[in-house]
Length: 179
Ligand SMILES: CC(C)(COP(=O)(O)OP(=O)(O)OC[C@H]1O[C@@H](n2cnc3c(N)ncnc32)[C@H](O)[C@@H]1OP(=O)(O)O)[C@@H](O)C(=O)NCCC(=O)NCCS
Image (cartoon, rainbow, N blue to C red; front, side):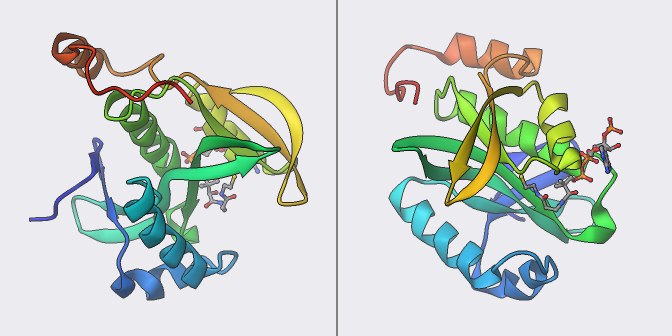
């Protein structure tokens, strides 16, 4: 059985591994080696990065989604990011995966602010962000590329059951402060 970092209704998210490279390469706009190696490095350094998104029913690799340790305009920010293999677009997968990542950020990490950097004409990605409650904050430059910064408190809008369990378990110890 797979050990998921995050589970949602249809999806399991697990750490990327070298054997995923061929699947990551199916997303031609990504630098697959960089995605893999950066994630492996981030797992060690901060415990998260891009994870593999798997359809739990059939075990199929459909893309990557995760929480990236980014630096923008001199500030470190946890960014929710997602990329799917094209044949899996349009099924609500990115929205579901990103919501799972936001729940993890709020629950396991205690974060109260996450961001997404979205290029101005990426309407699909902006729609995913909006569906998950992110709102536009500002325009910025990210690695010299103009982006729109969307933000959310990931603890808002969490599933009632998860949030309730969290509240019961919360003894106030060991939580990371908000970013
Ligand atoms: C962005 C991406 C991850 C979205 O994945 P997805 O699983 O298809 O997204 P979802 O199905 O959860 O939601 C997409 C939404 O965008 C809408 N949409 C699709 N094409 C659109 C378009 N051209 N303009 C505006 N909205 C669009 C869909 O209708 C849907 O909204 P709805 O549920 O209200 O109908 C996917 O398109 C992708 O991998 N793109 C390339 C990589 C990328 O841009 N990543 C984001 C970087 S910031």
